[in-house]
Image 1 (cartoon, rainbow, N blue to C red):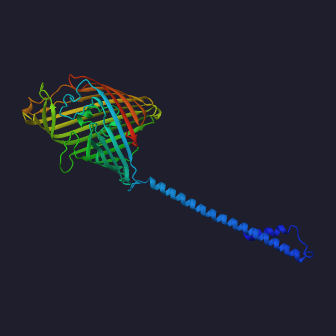
Image 2 (image 1 turned 30 degrees about the vertical axis):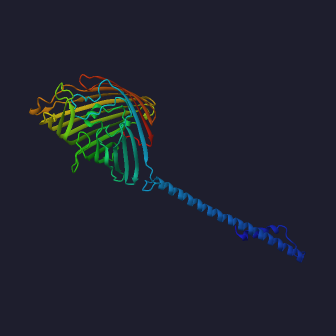
Image 3 (image 1 turned 180 degrees about the vertical axis):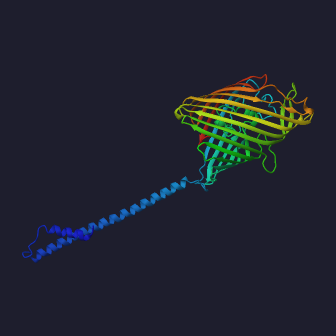
Length: 460
């Protein structure tokens, strides 16, 4: 309001009772002037006070807006990937603790029949710590992400399981890894041990991949822009993981191609299928305790140099009533691998030392189902089978090396596990292992798996 308005209001108030000018004396007029002056001063003071309060309110509003803007900017800065500095360094850190008890009737060091020259990773016997994992991951900047997983060996020592960077800004569905990682072949290979549905890997993974194929090199993936999940990938790697031979050379020592396709069927069903092709070269790969001659105590040591090519197929189907996986679900999965190796075999390097040609095609598969029949409780059944194949042995070693074992290793496993939360799991597993001819093994395993800290979600 203006001062004129307040003054007019005062004059109007006084005019309600009009004065008789003719009767008013000079004293009366002076009194009236003084009253008007007092009213004018009073209203001017009130106007000044109102103007001051208005200015204070405007200043407070500007400060509030500035504080809100600063808070918003700070929140946006906090949500961005850390660039450098201790305050910005905030990675996700997790620790996986695992332990097992294995009760076995047979020596776990004995390999499956016909696969003595393959990799063999026997389960632990008795009480064991199992493998613990320490994982660190974080966005490096808007372009890269880093992940490192250290495996703590029960016998002591630390090994680098994974240590790689990923690209975040290639666009067009492209992504890459560079460093050390689990290969993208098959379905199970990329999963860490704490995510397995059973205590151990299927026989085909143990025999053909040494449990898991880990490599150093470069991986490139492309995700197709389609409603159906379509992924194609390839790897150029060192060739350090079995069946390759870790050797110093320029260029890549092994290569991998893989593809996956999948989709949802309504809200209850989903599926994924894949294929992979791996190729590498083995150079002076030594296999010890090979029972080439029947009745030879302890076997002999052989050397093999040649090409190795493996093709694989994988499939998984999941079902959850009403799409609610917390209540119950069923998962069916299976994989098949077929490997062809050909080259030169040196028999009994310590004594006979005879070298001639050697070629064999070996294969294996597994099929397993896991059913969560109520919240926190699951049961699973798995069947494994291997085929050692019939080897083509050169004439010089025809009497030394067994070409046909005429036996197919098999195993059946049953497990039940309880997960009080997503961070803990207790498991009981029983298996009838008939992977070694004449040495049936009834096995019992107890396992715990505990997860501490922030851990990323697992893949499909």
